[in-house]
Length: 379
Image (cartoon, rainbow, N blue to C red; front, side):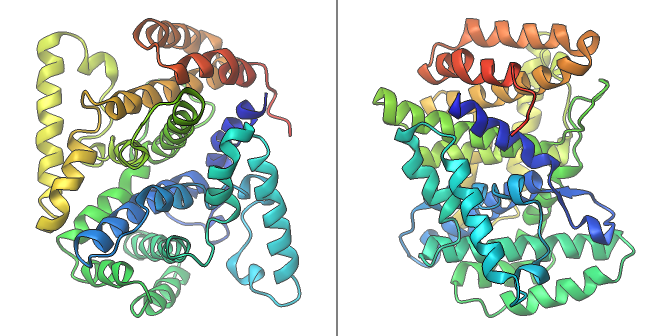
């Protein structure tokens, strides 16, 4: 099934390493990076609108930022210096284009036009494409800065300076503004750092995991699922889901865990009083994080972060993506470790079947999950 192959490609992103040739203190992968780019790009889009009065397509920016490196599941992670070499530059660009087109072909025809823009034309010459290209460099700068603070390889200081010098006079106002705020080392800097550090929050603690997982990779997959499910319901079933709101809420739904950590579900939901107490704790922690932002961003980020799983249809869709990703994780681990994950998988499946009747959930369980379950992950 085509759509199942696309979701498998999304899952594979966490297996594509980044910066590994420099042995960084913090391991990185394409899923972590793409989550961060989507989060920073969301902020940049809001800054363009709220501060500089420019109308931008926020959902298009998020989609391009989230999927811009998806072709690396086929091409692998190619070093920037290699991509720019005149002997191979055009060959690599052509290969990446063909890989991107192949990935789009995995989808139903009704969805392909959206994902063509997000994947094949991710960093095109449109304003949204140029912003995503700048945010890609911005994330590299932040990653190198963290390595300067905690790592030991001097190459990251050199790379940080290179990226910073490139961005400080960037053509796009929101990117220049973000760099300037980062340089203050307070306020917005703290919020950006929380996004960066989400990859240090381990998931599924207490379980034996064949594949390690963290909040950044989880949020990448969940956001990809939200975009897939939302577009599916809009195009195939005639819904009117606000795709920017759905994608933005999913991106920020677990960001509070950069402060609180990932508290195990059985603990948080052990009884109604404890559940309520943890909800209040997390909302309070999220509100404190948002205080580091300027006033013109606060209202929107509260909606995306504090109210990520509210009673709107978009909020419920975030909850669906969160639970579907847990189902995928349990499914993948169950193949190699049934004693550890079989009960988790069937409990999660039953919970989803009993709680949700959305068309996208029915479609996922009938087609996508079946394909994932029966796949050996060969191309």
